[in-house]
Image (cartoon, rainbow, N blue to C red; front, side, top):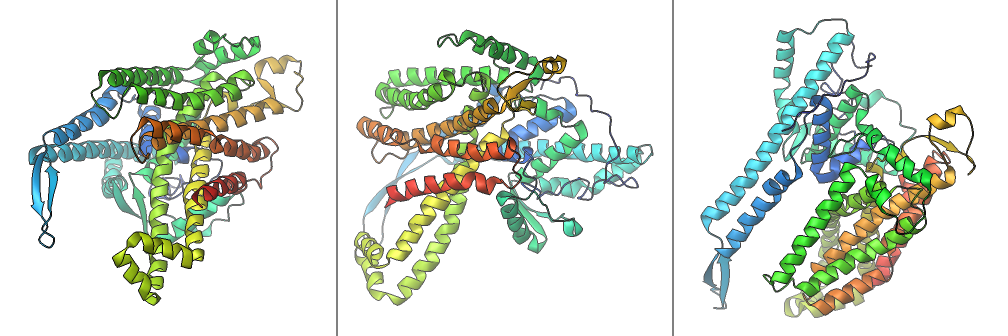
Length: 569
């Protein structure tokens, strides 16, 4: 593991929780473990959800210890290639066994993987999880040590190694329990006497409601250490003076290392349509790495398709994949490159698109599965009451389930429409629009960092204008819109790939092309993102404090939900 220079923290001021040498009120921390989304202006909480907090944990380690994460190829090898090879081996060496149904006498053939390979696969998965948990606990222990040391210094006392060791020893169980795959963490919220949050929005109130329900048993449920990593990230930002907001994730490249080149390109105002090279030279290490890796994956997939190893993925399927990507890139070309390339840099567009493709789509899948399970429970309860009074329907389900379902939809239209409403407006529209907003909110780029914004499109003259970059409200608003549309295009591109290659009823080239054309006819995701950007501009540019996430996403949820509802009906 590479070790870079440890960032020097800024001069500290005494914190409110450093009283009499005590550490933070929340078991050594200044915020509670269930404080996610309680501050609408805080971006780090969203980042803790991406990749189960992996990127946030890497940034915490770099800011506090100066340690860089392992290179991408090593992580791909350890967490993707080796598990896939083991799974492929289990499938290749599987042995067919025949079982006979004692009632019907029918024989069924089942493939069973060798016990040794199955044991090796699950052993490797458990080892990888245990190793990651150990790294997270080590990091949490270091954060606790830094917070205790800061509190002692702010109280005017020297740090006693014996007392420090005893304090860390007393926190061993808390550190261990905070980083388990799925666990209940003893409730640490002491905010009973704090005033109400006047900046609370829809998401804040919703999270508060969930927190109060979950904490009624004095325990806070978390999965994959997401809440603990977010708590540590908030603490690390406080300890290091928010230095993480001026550098990229993954590469940890500072904005001032590449943003001057972006400013120079913007000042040149070279509107040649094919003059791409200056924009490429001004990109950050992160954007270049993303583009190079995507190009490498496409080359590997092309060679795989040409080799005819898998009959289900031929060169024709590769053409469909390229067309799916081209559909999103074509819209991005019009929205950004043709008209607005100097309002938001190409570097930022790459980051926003990648966030929508790689981060928000998995989040949407997970949240949709969770909400789908909850709505399924509600549906089963309603179905139970229906079956309790309708004996004919029970008999119909036993004789012909498909006909019984059609009969149920006709006779109980209210329940059927209510189920479609939940599927379209809650599971699909609400979740997807919310994660797309979070996808925009979690990405910090120098183009949209706080800076002086003019009230007109005319450049102000003066000495100060040469020091502090200025831009018009129109340019900033355009940049916000392009950024949110880029996240939505990345999300829609990944979703289209899944519908074309995973959810297609039959794996044929004609069905894949038909699915792609049908989904390209009405680009609902970028349209909804553009609608969301109106609310974001009102909040961030016009200063409307009442414009929270609820008002931002509500119009988009209505449009998206109505579109899905019509398709389902």
